[in-house]
Every structure is written in C-alpha cells, then in structure tokens.
Length: 116
Length: 114
Image (cartoon, rainbow over the protein chains, first blue to last red):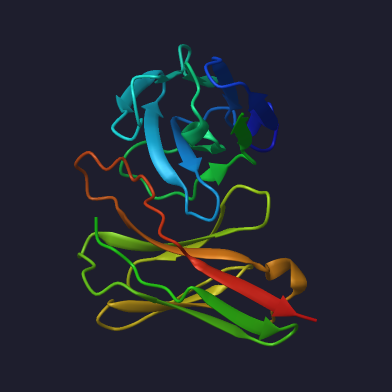
C-alpha cells in the first residue's frame, strides 16, 4: 500500500489480557519505529528496528512490552498482562533510509488501546 | 537531546498566513530542524526540515535564524485542514545511537477560524 498500515484501529482489552498490535510499513522501508502517545501528550519513543534487528528498545516501559520484526517487514508490538496505564495510542512509523540519513518518517494512523 | 520550546497554542483565521515559532537555543551543529504536524485521530505527518538555509515546499516554508537558535514554520494561507498540533523537533543525524529518532515535545495546537 501507499502508507503505513496499523491494525486493529481500536482495541479494548480487559486488564490482564495480552494484546498484539500489527504494523505494515511501506514496502522496502528499512527503519521502523514504535511510539506510544498518551492523551494530550506528544508521542514517546518505544523501540527501533533496522530491518529485522531491534537496535534500540530503551523506550519500552516494562518487560511486559515486546516487539518483533522477524522478516524485516511487518512488525508486531505485544503487551502482556495489560494494565490501565497502558491505555494509549500506539503509533508505528517507517522510513526507507536507515540510521543517519535524512528522511521524513511516515506514520500510521495508530492503534488506540483502551484497557478496562 | 537538544530541546525545543513552542507556544502551547495559536489561533489564525482562514486564508491568512500563520507563523509558528520554535526556540532551540541549545541546538548543535549536526542537528536538523524538523517539523511534523498531527491532525486529529491521525499519526504525525512530516511537513518540512532544514539545517541552515530557509526551505520551501508545497506545504510550508521554514525560516531559520542566522544563529540557528530559533526557527519559524510559515503556512502561507491557512485553511481549516491546517488545524493540527505542530511539532518542532531537532534530529541529530551525525551518528551515535540516536538512529535519527524523533523526540516529540508538547507542540503547538493551531486553531484556524473560518
């Protein structure tokens, strides 16, 4: 497709449930980022992939958060034992260029996760 | 990461120019100035970026101060579709482990009146 696709668009999870959020980046894009955006705040960095390698996961808030990109294309963000504080919009962004190159990133529309 | 300072909100009338300021007094020589905007219920959208010289594209213009400690995003004729949160971000592409990741602040909420 022409853009970054994220699914589902909305997800309601009961506290303690595991969730998986999917990101389909633009074909051929090397770099992939995940961000978390709480209501009324700017997006906050979670993790970065260059192809299939997860080069930075310093923004993941706890070990309940796990991300993968096994074939260097589609990525999944998994949250185990969801808590209410995990409620947020999760954004995925991708870019053709890898580290150090100038490029605007293309963001998906995000997945809005609500934990009840 | 070098930080940016933006006003919390600004208002404009439709078809008038809008100047969105950004201060970045601690900018380093390898920091590029990027602007993104986020429309309601959408992900951020790339607008423009620059290093030292003023830049123009189909969406906006970026005016960068000579000392690079501030910049201004210019929307030449605001439309209702320009109502969004505008983020000014410094991006270090010199190397290290930044991976060129974007560090968002609070941004400026732009309201456009018909």
